[in-house]
Image 1: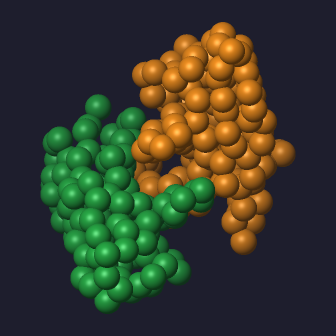
Image 2: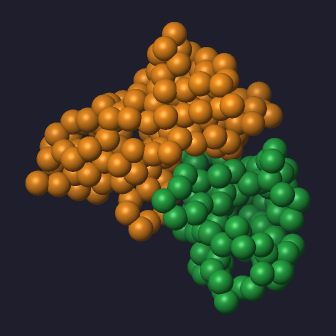
Length: 107
Length: 124
């Protein structure tokens, strides 16, 4: 199985900050990398698919980049509704696997 | 509007069985692979199983192989997860999810819509 890691595991930031989360795969996954946002008690929500494609309805302050083994999710200007946990997920091979998550909270 | 609504969760004793259901609406259910994903309390996300549009292919995470069975009824727009020989470590919120947004000819899709989840607790 492909192992996914994320860094940092948590971060504190202020509204308006630029936030970057990193995801690394244990082997090359081309661009089969997806990002999700999850708020407490809610289902995950797809933000980015295929490493850099913005899911319909997701604000443009979210962006993704990378290929191979290293990927990033960037929030260009953090908004109050963005405080949540973010997960990366590889869809290169079965079983699809998730990173452990990055919790973004208020500084 | 795409909607996925899970049901069937509850408290079950170790070794017991439970059948989860997911009712889909707002899209052509028979055109999409579907997945189950679970999340243990306070933990991360774990993919459990998926099933092809016509039910001809099914895949499972190793930890549930031989115990869980995924199935679907396209006439009823419904997805199911039969869970047998349940263990304490199966305790989790179980989500059904659609594989999309359907940009690839086979596989590699993300999980573009999720249900609200149903809690399964395995305890004596």
